[in-house]
Image (cartoon, rainbow, N blue to C red; front, side, top):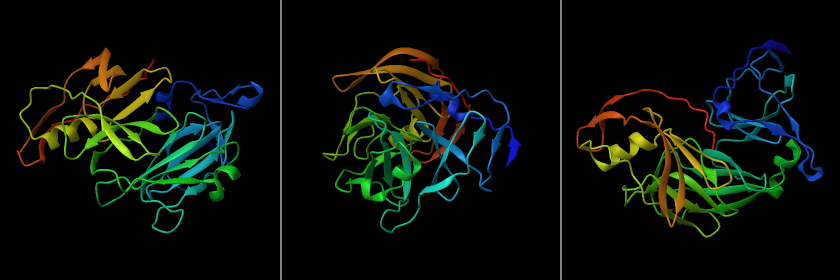
Amino acid sequence: MKNILFLFASLCLSLSVHAGDSDKGKVSEIAILGKPIKVTTSNKEMSPQIFIHDFLISSNSDRCRYISKLKPSSWDKPELLLQNGGDCNEFDNVCVGKGIDNSLLVLENPTMGNKFLSMTVIPDTKSIASIKDVTQWKKYSLTETVPISYGSRNFVTLSDSTILIIGTPYSDLNHLFSVLNFKKPSISPLTYFPQDGVKASKLSKFDVYALDSRIYGNNKGRYFYQCEYSKFAFIFTIENNEVKIIKKMYSEYPDYRDDQSGKISKLKVEILRLLPVL
């Protein structure tokens, strides 16, 4: 055990953090105050991903996912949750998210290739033991979906069968967002793409606005998009498969050029981190 100052920079985007027994109507709050906490080290550099109850799921350069219990004054040693690999119950590249019923969603896409592989739903998240119980996992194959351009860090759950992603079918790069149905595998693009006036290939444009960008939701039909490479961010709703921007937070389009072959030859990066209040 040792004291370190752990800064949850990316987790600040999650607004407030709560943990507790929702079945009893009791919710205990964990305050992220930027103060030293006691940590049982795993000797790994961890990047926080999401909270479920009071469990923190993190990633490492080995592309695995780890889970640990966060307490008001301590952070338990992370345990391996999702193993990177090709065997049963192992995963390639993954993006994790929270289901509408506090389930854990694991979206898998390949290192090589442009099709989603699977969505795994982990329904019981009341304890680390129940989360790691692979007999309770439900995996949905997505290999029959169309090839997709995708590069986001996260997704937003819309229902018990659909999620909102930053991505679009590879055959139609005129969209930035799509709805993925993982129970009835399909990808439905939403009508919207930034009109920045830059003459570049569609693939370059998509990469600039999609790669490593983020989306968030408030569970009330409002969503927040933030471009990774510029001061470009907005709050939006979805109406009849169209994106309706209701508030622009920043409107500075990315400064980029390409060589007309789909490769970005110039990109001026201006990193912006916002706390979305939806």
